[in-house]
Length: 469
Image (cartoon, rainbow, N blue to C red; front, side, top):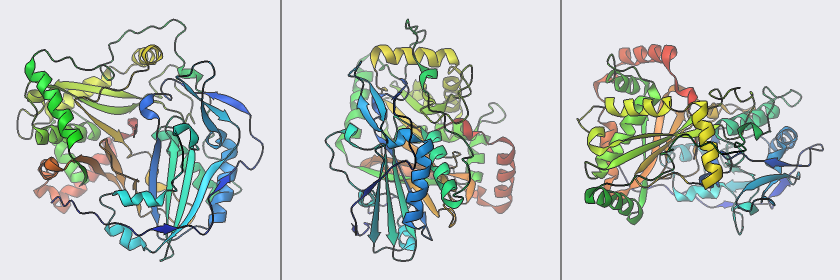
């Protein structure tokens, strides 16, 4: 059950100053346009991944392969800047300045970190070199730190600017770097596609949808107003603590069975509905309050023509499921309604909807409506956990820190399991964990576990989703 205490890690130390790793050979000197999906204000941060390896890779080898891969991914060696034509918009100056690379040492073993890895804590920030920067534009798009452990292992931490890449794009880049580290003379399995003009706005804006993912809910009566204030007060007034719950294939199968045969659903839809319901049940807002679930959806194949293979920019949009508290938490274990509204939110995301959203962002530069929203970012099924630099796959992969956004994380060594990580107000932490685990029970039996794995081999459909945090 929930425990608020987290294990602090020791301080790291640096024998040398961080250095800039530049592309090995000349790269195009150009300005890279960022689409409206790239240049959203809520994406102006870096996606921070942390990897634990039992056996370290030489820093010189990592730097050499990084220098090589930056020839292909040269925008990551550039710098963000404000557009001269529009001060509210960012672009990338592809100037080859390089990625920041730091090497650190820590009196810690891989096993000690694994014992504390279930819940990230603020001390993990020691795994990433801290830059003295005045603003977001001063930070290189790619920052890397390798921390050598005293057991011979290493922790690799990467910070990749979200304006340049989404979850699929970051995975594509990291896999390319790892590939060139282990096979230095080989070519990249996927060539990056840089151009973002495929997602340019219309010359005359054509906004054909209302876009509830960006527009706030207007309460129709006093209870609704109080409900919004209640949620905002709950989330802002208390310290947040991370909750981590692992769902084995048998657990996910059990969730899906609650919707079969009356409603067929994917594993993502079932787990998203269950997590959303658990969050609302823990907070206990007014029954009539309209609440939202925002979740990231990969639209690369929904566009016509499809975005090219190798497109590593932001090719996702936010799906928005809406319902009332009463409808969502109606019965004790009924995820049926939540799944239904998630499916409806996915179905509306046609090419026309995406084009309308791009034009909407061109006119309004809007931020997502977070007043009554729960946000899920999908990191599973992207291959992030398979990053092998030549000395084996990681024994742990996850975020550098836990945030209020919910992450669906891969489990190293178990393709069909998912770890749900989210920070919640301390007052509701124990209750939230209880509701999340309430679905677990007798289905731990070995036979049902094998049945679940067979089910997943045939019908696991998480790959169309991807992260926004």
